[in-house]
Length: 164
Image (cartoon, rainbow, N blue to C red; front, side, top):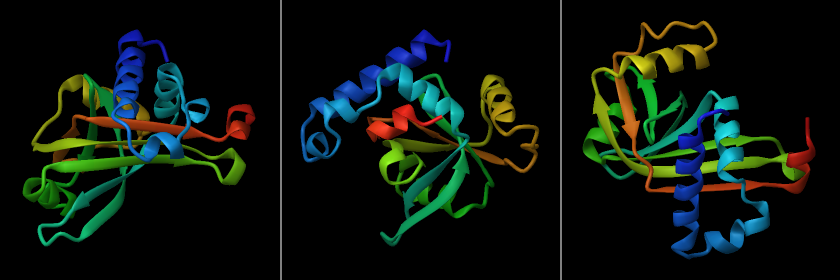
């Protein structure tokens, strides 16, 4: 990952998130956290995340989604009539979970923050998302969710760092 602004932003966001305390500091000890640079590379390698929103009646909703990081936000292409769009309109908050591996080789980046529904994304976001979509079209994306994270946490088992 060559973007020093992204690396700094992710590292600072994670540091601020962990500094607020709570049980996550014990669950994700410092020696298991990724650096800002490692988080940037990890997110660049992963194209999909699990997006979690809340339905108007309070029930949870989770679904996989393509995502792109750009301008200190996470951008998710979606259908304009998707449940997640209605959820964000009713409860403008979104959580993303980016996971890989199993047991001693697993890693995770978890982030959450306020979200909004947009009818279009900046051309740079569309270009980046097309690249991440590996040649697939985004013609179906009639809306975009932009989540501006307030919290970000990472965790990696020791064996994950050594896995190919």
